[in-house]
Image 1 (cartoon, rainbow, N blue to C red):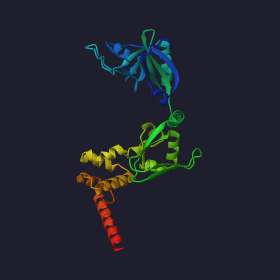
Image 2: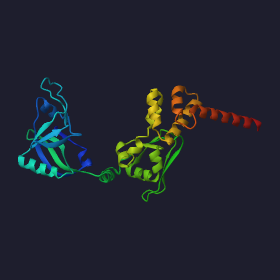
Image 3: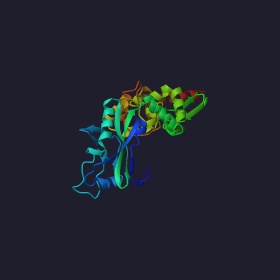
Image 4: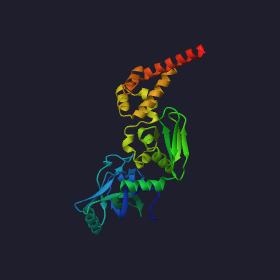
Length: 304
């Protein structure tokens, strides 16, 4: 590909992660109006695009080409279907293999070659979840992943793996963020799986959450940013947020807001009441119990 222009190269970065590539084909592409100018300015995206064979033609679907800024009536639908130019023998070969099932035809990149715009498509086989996780382990073992404590108070995560036995990750307070290597995070999650699933700590990396098999659990968790802005949500939004939270996270935010009220911070008591509906003990009751405890402690000290 030495003849490609450096300025015209758009890659589909998800392909290698989602698929095992079996065969690659170089195609021309039929563009209209100002699409050529947009492509030459790299104003296109291959994410979520794919190709099909229809009436013995290869059709590229879902490739987004942004309208040219200086364009006019010659601009076209950014997501229109586009014909890819491939010889008939290759089309027949691809069509035969697709009919066997289990394969997909996906664009891997768009580039220029000898002043022409080309698209590389690939026959691919979808990777299984295990394969994707293995790829993540190999590629991102040394990637730094941020995690946030969602526990009110001090939180210790133990790592009992052979690689780093006895290593303890300590958070001093709710909302504290620390970075760990991905392979260490795997060990912490494996050792403290319940803490991960119930939201005692929150992984601030969607890919890591996916590869650790926590996507379903994270549909019921909130991060510290949401908690810190809870008073900014409407009553209906707040109800929706709290209703799906785990008991562990409900307990943490109850202690957090009780502490704020105890120290005189002004909060919307109507919203505090909404949160309290989902708790075994209401937040205002928790504050009162803490004040009563302090009064008893003062009285006991005075008697002594």
